[in-house]
Every structure is written in structure tokens, then in C-alpha cells.
Length: 150
Image (cartoon, rainbow, N blue to C red; front, side, top):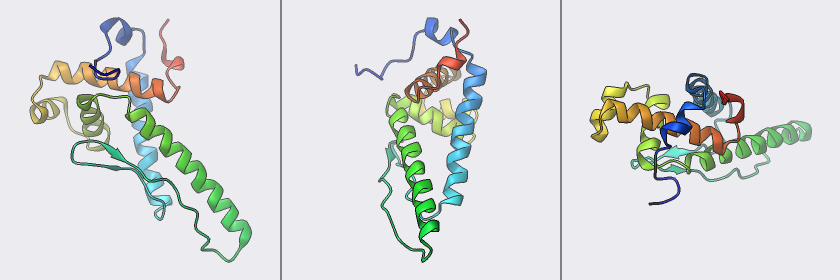
């Protein structure tokens, strides 16, 4: 069993405000979708058929004739690259079921029963896996402390 293969124990799941954490993860997924529109020429992470994230980092391009515009654009794209790299890093901390459940929930908007049926698990396991995934994901992004109940 690898370090990220196990679902977090109930004791850990209970010390976080899952409702607020779920909203935060939804914001992150929505932000990435908006960034795809704004920075359409920047390479964005893609999700493979087996729910792995593939991401090639930003390559500097000098397309503009106005140097200030280029510098600002590159700075924004470099920040975007850092942001996306952090998300990919956080996603790598999840087990396969957690990856599938996060993508199916926050990217595709599927319901628990539908997710469970598609990967062959019960609804209760989907809910527990999603809670575990959300906590692991935000912890890897170092955003978990503000959601502690204790």
C-alpha cells in the first residue's frame, strides 16, 4: 500500500469542515476552467482516460511588440504555471478512486450514485472517498488549516 492509497480514517474526516472544503475545491476547479479561457495559448493540465493528470509547463513566448505587455503577460503566465503545478502536485496525493471521484464530481458534475455505478462502489464509499480526497487535496495545497473544527 502506497502512502496515498488509503482513505483517511473517520477521526481525521471529522475534524475538518467538509462543507466549506468542498466549496473551496469547487472554486479551484472553476478557476482552472476560467483560466483555460483567459490563457488559451498556455498549456493546461489534461486528464487522461485513467484519471492521471498530464501537464507540461509553460514555455516562454515573445509574441507581442510591446515589451511591457510581454513582461506582464509572461509574469501572469509564469504565475499560472506555478498555480497549475501546485494543483497537479496536490492531485498526485490522491489514490485512484479519489482522483476519479474528484474529477467526476467537480469537473463533470456527476451524482454520487452515478459515480459509484461507473467505478463499481457503493454510494457511501463515494461520499467517504470524496471527503478524504478533498482533505488530502487541500492539505497538499496547504489550505487545510482554516477548515479545522478544533
